Amino acid sequence: MRLGKIIVDIDGLDLSKNDIDLLQHPFVGGVILFARNFLSVDQIINLIESIKQIRSPSLIIYVDQEGGRVQRFKEEMTVLPAISMLGEKYKNDGEDSLILSKELGWLIGYELRCIGIDVNTAPVLDINYNRSNVMQGRCFSEDPKKVSLLSEAFIIGTKQSGISSICKHYPGHGYAKTDSHIELPQDNRGLKTIFNDDLMPYKKAIKLGIEGIMTSHVLYKNIDQYPPTLSSKWLQILKNDLRYKGLIFSDDLSMNALKDFGDIEDNVLKSLEVGCDCIFICNNRKKVEHILDNLVLDMSDDISNKLINLSRNRIKDNFKINKRRLSVINNLKKIADKKQIEIKL
Image 1 (tube, rainbow, N blue to C red):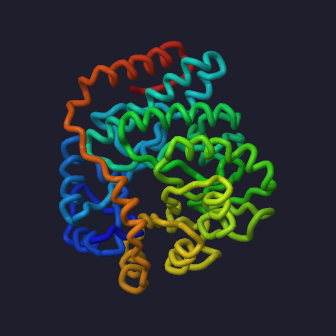
Image 2: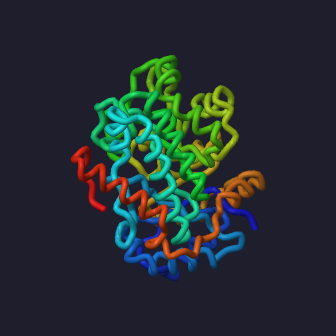
């Protein structure tokens, strides 16, 4: 059996009959979990195992575990700092900040693997242009070179943990002011500027073999009339100019940013047609059911095999006593004690 291209969510702490029926649909290939799905480490391990038992090959389990205000799982796990902390530290101690970025990438991936997650949708590769509230704290730095260096170290750490990763939001959400959950953000810069600055971290990530890249719902109006999620031009740049061969994921198609380009059903087809491999559709079960019941989607062996390769076996460690983890937490606490950053651990 193949894995499908649609990634969906579930409502609660365990699977309902409706969830199980939905997840058995051949067009579904994965589940993204949110804070509402998490109560404790034991509970989330059981939930993930129950999801993985539904299909063979098992569905891929995703989460947004960036750190800071975008962290879905907290109780009994490390409450992570925002990655902007690393950029602040870099100003005073570049070498140590790179080491800590690698260790933080490892820590996040290690904890997620210990509970059974396959894919983390991190790191964020956007540049902080101090224009967007939605990106506050989520970017490594205001400097593209520092973002590139820190994200490179972070990805090396994630590779050491064994987690699969999706970096985002291609080609860059940092310059656009508005929140794509609410409306369509716009970026009026030219391609040369974006290519030289915003795409710099992607070049590093691709060389490191990042497993996935997520498209943004931003309109770069001087470059194309469609946002990258619906743009063959932007995806050809990714594949041809940047020589990216991995999986391309859309950001959540339920966001209001895309409503002027068609309803969700239309945008699923458009996104797949222009080159996205997998589609996130979150927090809209009725639309998901309608899409699965009414659309005919290509079932590609190549994409299915790449998705299967994202799967990771759970590390059956008691991560709370892992020495490397405790060392990383101790280093993070030292930063907090020096008042370089406020952080709860």
